[in-house]
Structures are given as C-alpha cells and as structure tokens.
Image 1: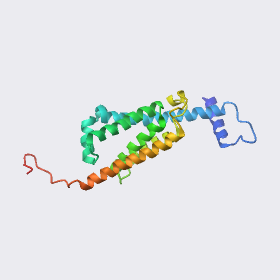
Image 2 (image 1 turned 135 degrees about the vertical axis):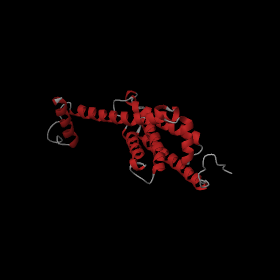
Image 3 (image 1 turned 60 degrees about the horizontal axis):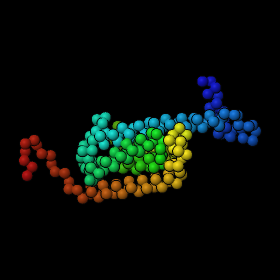
Length: 213
C-alpha cells in the first residue's frame, strides 16, 4: 500500500512538471499515472453505465419497478413526447444500449453521445427547477455531463475499445457524435413544444361515475 501511494505521489509530481528539466521521471511513475487514470475511468464508466442500463431496462422490459414500453409510452404521451411508443423505445435503447457500451468501454464516443442526447431531452422535462428533491433536472443533467465527458475522454485502457486498438474510439467520432446528438435532442424538444402548444387544455376532473359528456 505504501509503495502504491508513493508511486501515485511520484506520478502526480511527474504530471505537474516538477521533474522536468531537473530530474528524470522515476521509473514506474508514468505507468502509475496511467493505471490511476484507467482505474478512475473504469469506476466512472461502471457507475454511469450501470445507472443508464438499469433505467433503460425499466423502460424496455419493466424491470426494477419500471413501466415497460406500454407504461413508459403512456407517461411520455402525457409529457408531450409523441408518439409515445416509439419515443419510449428510443429512450430505452439510448439508455440501455448506451449504458451497456459505456460499461464495457466499446464505441465510447457514440455510446456517450447517444446517452447525452437522451439525458438532454429528459432534463427539459424537469426544467426550470434544478434540485432533484424539487423535481428538477439536477440528476439528468449530471448524467448528461458525465456521458459527454466520457465521449470526449474515451474509456481508458481497461476497456474493449483498448483491446480493439481504439478502432471505434476516434477523436472525430466524439465531436460528430455529440453534435449529432445535440441536434437530434433539439429536434425532439421542438416537436414536443409544438405538440404541447397545440394540445387542448385539460378539462376539469371527472368524478367517479359521473358522465363526461
């Protein structure tokens, strides 16, 4: 443990440039820095990817107390995302598919971008309140920022992308994926706004057993 801590400190000094021009970077410091970075990215991917996967399974399969496609579609219709069923499937795939790929570190730019767009649309539902306990967008915004960061930084060395030689993790993929995701999310939100603006106002609640007409 002491050796690991010493290596981490040396790695930090190496990153900060304390050894540049005066002393050679100690052997193993660079490897330690790389290992710490990869470990941090693995922890981030596991947490973010696992959460997204669980929420996607709620929408697609009704697992973990979710509503499945039918229940999610009905909720989406009420929120203005129409048609409800395709919107529910798209959101579920964005979360479950993107979460799985982030978790294993495969095609990370595309997976991160897809999840970011999904979370951007979800954040709009909770806007303008911010804090989660007030029904705000704090939680979904945090997921959006995290997935966007992973799309830009990549999954690290402990990933399937690394095993494949980063063929599916190129810098241009990150930029193109995030731009395309933002454009798609904006289009979905504009369509939602148009639907809500044209929808008739809800009628007064009907008492049980009272005819509506």
